[in-house]
Length: 255
Ligand SMILES: NC(=O)c1ccc[n+]([C@@H]2O[C@H](COP(=O)([O-])OP(=O)(O)OC[C@H]3O[C@@H](n4cnc5c(N)ncnc54)[C@H](OP(=O)(O)O)[C@@H]3O)[C@@H](O)[C@H]2O)c1
Image 1 (tube, rainbow, N blue to C red):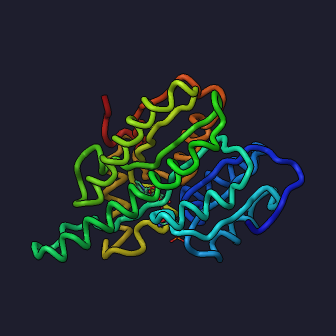
Image 2: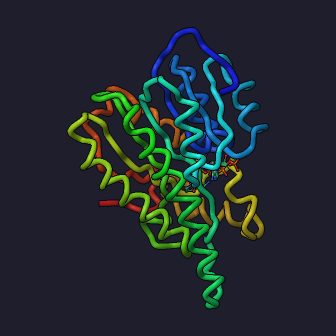
């Protein structure tokens, strides 16, 4: 961890907290007076989140690849003896968004990447941190995608559907401890790094098309997702568990 605090508050752990939605969620939790541990593979983006936060001393960082056993162990080491109040699994990406070629090695590569980036980055840290989670107040929020609901987007969509399935399985297992587990499924959210790689083409055309699919007439901003995560992490969110909640301007309707 890069900084230290004298008060040992329970932590909110944000996996993928260096950019996009995770960054905004981390900043928001700090404004609520929480200590936040942010995880990512790039030290510089994590440092920037700490620097630009309203209370940098509340932001702790760990550089780790959350999709690996070593990364999960590093996250647990960074938590140390502190308790964990909430985990937000926001790491992910479009690895595997496109249909891979039919060659077995292409399939293996695309599917392994999609599952590692979008499923393992949640499962490995969450399972490793479960013993450190607070009973009764513990909260797990997974950032899925409407792609996982609609089945749109190659292996990425399947990985996000699997993530939502994991969220429900986890909810059943940890309910007796008073811990909740939910999945937020965002639609198209601007101001993230999500669309920067992967050959999506002209982003303004994509943004216009995504906005047209909403009922509200605009794409999302990280803040739209943060507001929902804040609610699920709060004490008042304690009777919501095992759910998949679309935050997407009405693009898909779940039930
Ligand atoms: N933007 C959208 O329209 C949209 C829509 C639906 C769902 N989502 C989902 O929302 C979540 C947040 O994405 P975003 O849109 O905010 O994009 P983003 O800015 O690219 O954020 C993703 C973050 O995950 C981190 N990350 C990726 N792989 C990691 C790993 N193996 N270990 C640790 N950290 C890792 C990245 O940092 P490093 O590269 O430094 O590790 C990055 O900070 C993702 O799960 C994404 O699939 C996005």
